[in-house]
Image: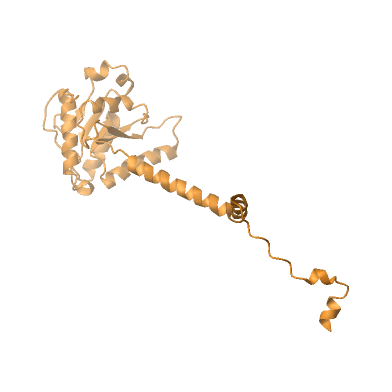
Length: 235
């Protein structure tokens, strides 16, 4: 009785079950049906696939440098230090056999200026500290002001940081631990290198502490720096 009361006045034709929608038959119909129901999941899938492919391509094509050097100056970034990179590459070996000598610069600008914030300075000191702790860089170059500060910090901690160079020559320190390129004609006579600090101290880290196990890299960096000091380019 209740059902009849609810359906009173309803056309019997409306109570018939609607026919199931016809399945799409053509490719265009099937595509429209798929796109209607799965558009956003498809877009998300394509995006994820593109990211994976890009990451994979970068990993496969990545060319690691033959040498890495950390350069600490007052305000020079990696772009203004390119002349130093070019200079070092002339004295390097093709260690990975890819047909070219590559030097990667890690720049730490530690000075204060009107363009540098406290956050910038803190970040650059953290970059320096991170590489010291990880031991992933064996070759260093410090602007003279920061070299004195750094070596003072190392001596207070009781650590011998630099490896004896084992060579003599203009610019080599009395203790034989570093080379200062001041007054070197390759620097003073080169218009591009003249824009960099005229007193830059180069040294190679000892393969101890957090750099333990990096003796091979240490010797490679020593060989590079010795050739620079003796002005013996490899190519």
